[in-house]
Image (cartoon, rainbow, N blue to C red):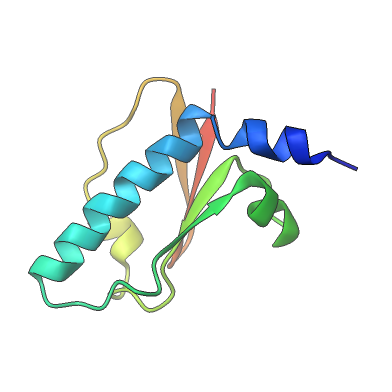
Length: 95
């Protein structure tokens, strides 16, 4: 079992911060295109673990535009790996 301290430390990972940066960019793009971004969520490692995935962070946007995960341009960040899980989830990992 992981401690609260472990989960708090995971929120300092580059992958978690990168997921937040990309989510902000997605929200801004959604606003410009008149889309609702309220369902766009960044999950911490703890929340990802509770959903049965293995990742340092994830972006979930179930109500986003169809195939948004493959249609967006994401600039890779040094030390962070990004992986499309399905039509509404991108996972982030520190490498």
